Image (tube, rainbow, N blue to C red):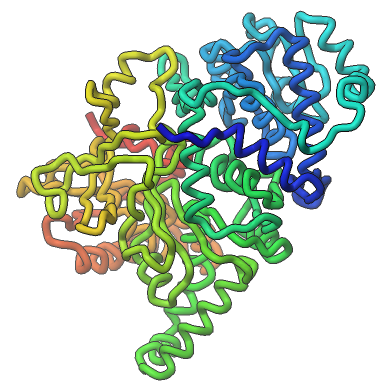
Amino acid sequence: MIKERFIGYVEDSIKQNWEIEALSNYKGQGFSYKEIAEKILKLHMLFEKAGIKEGDKVSLVGKNSANWCTAYLATVTYGAIIVPILPDFKPEDLVNIINHSDSKMLVIDRTLMEKLDYKDLPAVNTVLYTEEFEYANGKKKEVKELLENIDKAFEEKYPDLKPEMIKFSGIDNEELAVISYTSGTTGFSKGVMVPHRSLAANIRFAQNNMPLEPGDKIVSFLPLAHTYGCAFEFLFPFTYGCHITILTKTPSPQIILQAFKEIRPRLILSVPLVVEKIYKKQLQPVLRKPMMRVLLALPGINSVLMKSIRKKLFESFGGNFHEMVIGGAAFNADVEKFFKKIKFPFTVGYGMTECGPLISYASWDTTKLGASGRPVDTLEVTIDSSDPLKEVGEIILRGDNVMLGYYKNEKATKEIIDEDGWMHTGDLGIMDKDKNIFIKGRSKSMLLGPSGKNIYPEEIESLINNQYLVAETVIISEDNKLVALVYPDYEQMKKDGISKDKLEDIYAGTRKEVNERLPSYMNVSKFRIHDEEFVKTPKRSIKRFLYIKK
């Protein structure tokens, strides 16, 4: 088992980076590592007064902010278990998760608490607002009294706080640190139990392999309640002494790019959706112009143009980063090829909440086209097939990153982790001789073609989603034929003055173009217009089961 401890990483970073900036809200207040340490210790005092012990659960619900991060750190360094919950969940789902997790304390945004009824949370003895950690509700008056005099009480306990005084819980690495919920609905709540060793394994790998130095700037815009954004836009850079600027509102690509230009981060984390949108809206229209196509066909000019495009794209992301790491979902194959062609410094990683999240990664200059990196050093990863180099099989793994199981759901745990400790990811892929992982799709979404060949709808969807006037797609099978449900890009249609009655003819040409790039057994028989945006999970994955006919 890994010897490094997550709490040790936090302690060391605070001690070593005492005076420098740690967390800032975008266009708002910032806090040094010393100030974050003070806030953590004040919360520890409140936890103690509220009767919170090591192993107790604390739910955290709210938008990304410096205080959100502080509450997370305070909980885990106390030895309690943090339950970060997406603020996007409906009120009834929030109540269900808080109760299902057996949380004794709730830290929540004021506006979200206004939608809940404290009487519906019987196990919760204290509620604090994330805004300045004000008292909201509770069963222990002494917590409210302490809060009213917290600065005085802190001065009495720590009259002259120094870096060497920072010492948090010594809780064992195998103990539970985080419960991360992938669903909120009653009866379907799956709380992923992430242990301390998983957090430590993710951070150790990032520190050894991702290019950052103390004082470097980071922009955090991914949901921190998810393990991907939490681990690599917050925990890893915090333990490395970086300055993290947090976009507190759900940002549009325009706001994200504006923040990048102002802050000029040294490492960029992104989901494919943001990058693909920038490519489709800003680069593709230029590349499709007839004159540009002619110029790109000329070898000498092609090279100059590609360098110019790379420079402009690099500058649009702040122009100061070592690498862009893309993860969280499949990356569009056409966009990936183009980025590779212009030598843009990006890489695609692979992870799951159940691994806290990292499974594989390779630096931008060593990664292979179409691959999702190589297994991290704390995991044993293999392909469950007779020939992992050529025959697609399920990706299975075991090691320090792997969760303890699903909270209060032994049945679901046994379905994913077998008796030998192998976790079955549900993802299908192959692995080459250099251990590069090539993901083909999800086992649950795989379709059987008319000829008996396996079809991975994600590959076709990736191709269609890159086409003109297509926003998103779901591939389904009907009468042994593939049908594309297409949600049109209404924004682009309005911009170009194209009416809906023209779509059928345009899509007929698109379908023909797409099929020419696919093997015959993967050809799409028709496009069917889907008028509404597809229903998605909080992680922005389409709930494809809703569109498959029984």
